[in-house]
Image (cartoon, rainbow, N blue to C red; front, side, top):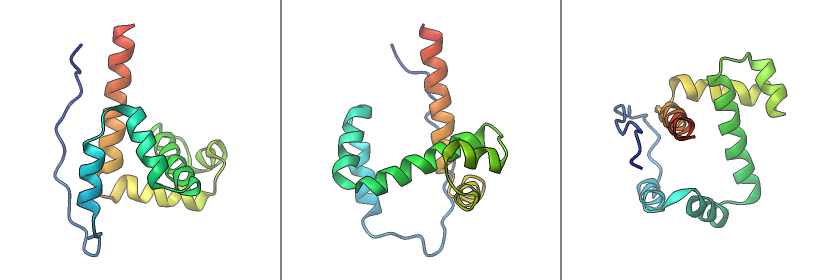
Length: 117
């Protein structure tokens, strides 16, 4: 069944000093993967366990913040520090928009799955 996911992406602001060598090549590699299993396998090969845990932890914090939970509640549920919660919140609200895109797409996918049930 075709996906109803909105493919529009807001224009990304350019942040001075944010040019990371080979980031475009990395993005292309991820774009070429098919499905969550291939992405997880790629990330497992690319990142250390600690890096993967940090990425997953930040994603959890972003999702909890998106639910509107207070920082202390987010820190408790994510078993992390309020410093990390504050940093994720800063990027969530003033970053390049990546968290917002991923959060919206995730909601759309979940809503589509619920409608199919």
